Amino acid sequence: MSLQIGQIAPDFTVDTTEGQITFHEWIGDSWAVLFSHPKDFTPVCTTELGYMARLKPEFEKRNTKVIGLSVDPVERHADWAKDIEETQGFAPNYPMIGDTDLAVSKLYNMLPATAGDSAEGRTAVDNATVRTVYVIGPDKKIKLMISYPMSTGRNFDEILRVLDSLQLTAKHQVATPVNWKNGDDVIIVPAVSDEDAKAKFPEGWKAPKPYLRIVAQPEG
Image (cartoon, rainbow, N blue to C red; front, top):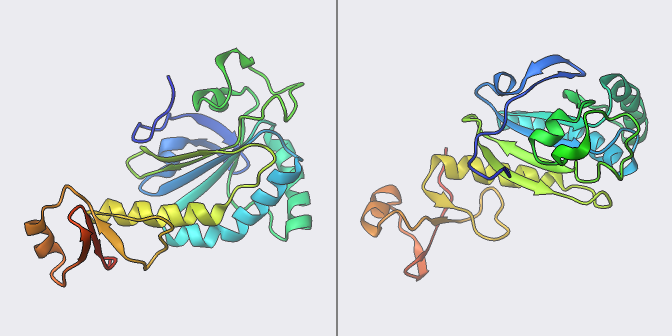
């Protein structure tokens, strides 16, 4: 069965570069970003892991934990981290899952059930579909899924932007418009009547159409 937004993220227990974790327990009351990689010592992923390490404080400000996954043993992750620090200026400062039996990759529909049960002998091309970003909420539900081709580096600034939107809209009855950034105007969701909106947004809103009610971003 394919994963969907709003579905409980599959739980698992794995070895990581920071010891064994059980995913849901590790998330706790935080948000989480899980991002996966087809193989260690690959060029695009090297740049991604370094940049994510640099951005980690921004995720921490948002009560968000970061965890990576690569279809290689944890021991290789440690060796790869040296290259990442040398070339990108930052070594991974978050746990990296060693998915040597492909269990998590298959659990998250990144590899087919027929992929076998060992990373041994598999190339990055064999694992090309293991390049997905998942954002998971404190309720353990999937909030975002984005899959990328191997040739395209991921935009983690965009993940931060989406995280800001997810956290804002989880707290207030608003949605964020195209190209929204934190601090921009937002949209009152259709489920809120005009009468209720007057109580929630006493300073009023702009409505170029009755269904398009634009209001300043709520605080808090």
